[in-house]
Length: 466
Image 1: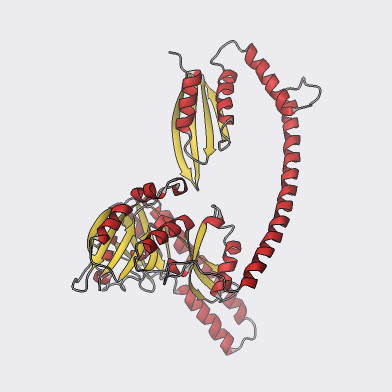
Image 2: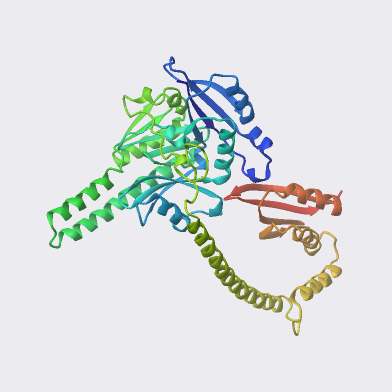
């Protein structure tokens, strides 16, 4: 019986705009395989997805495949749920998690873990990733039984946290279905934050128990309260196990935290790759073998045939669409009212700003037209082509054409106009090409970063004196 672990290492930031053939050429992955005669798994492939398909086509069929996604692509959390019915929880998740997620909740994929004491573990990733991988696995008849995150390659035992390093990131496994990832530079902050939160929850729980004990309480109620308190304390680790000894600075920080919080720290000289190759058995002296965490196949898809779960009754489907239509109409009416109020307030603020900027004006007929006229007058009276207003007019006119750009701040100093902008994608090359060709301006990108799907850029503009 041949087994395989398919480990995806990264996905493009904006895959929605990439056709399938290009998308799978840009996805890098590793394959670890094992036959019934092998004692450990072997890394048999490293490359893009298209070559991976060719690789498995030339090898013996596999009886079971486990899929591992990048740690930063899957968010793990827990929520209080109104029911133990998994179907009802799935229906309620968009409302329970709407405030937690910055991105569009309609584009998210949810999978449920264990449900205990009205708390449910949740795994969240992008629907696009799930759709594309499921589509390819179904197309090539690959028998995948598990899909999880890099976090759960770390072996786990109760009251023992595991920490591993992947390039410039670390992963912390804090429970059978819980974990977190961040950059190595933040290891001290993140680890302290996790430990302090548990200590705070423990302190609050202890206060509640003390309050209960001050009243007449039955033995059964006291035993239940003590059981809940013990479950909470069990979340705090007595040992932190570090996999891999190459990151000495980070390990030193973890050991210092261990001394401060009275937690034992062990270092095992095997990294996460070694855990995969041995399926966690090499670390079994200190911890259990690999537990794969929340299976993403328990989400909106069925692991048996890789098809979406269907609503069983036509009446339920019709009722759902009617309720959705009525809700949409009411929502659109509410949104229109909000838009009208915001538009009215914005116009009032614009008029106030106009009078402050041009105090000699007597009345306002059209704020935009009058403001453009005033600015043009100032521009015409400017004595230098490289003045602030000239530069602002040239750059502002070009930026105004791109509806996806929002200016968050601007500065002008010594002939250089600096814009802080936010956009849906990288727009520097477009602005540079247009302004340099049309107006002979010099355009320089000072910095650029992506935060929560938005690109934040700082760009300088000045007149080319040559």
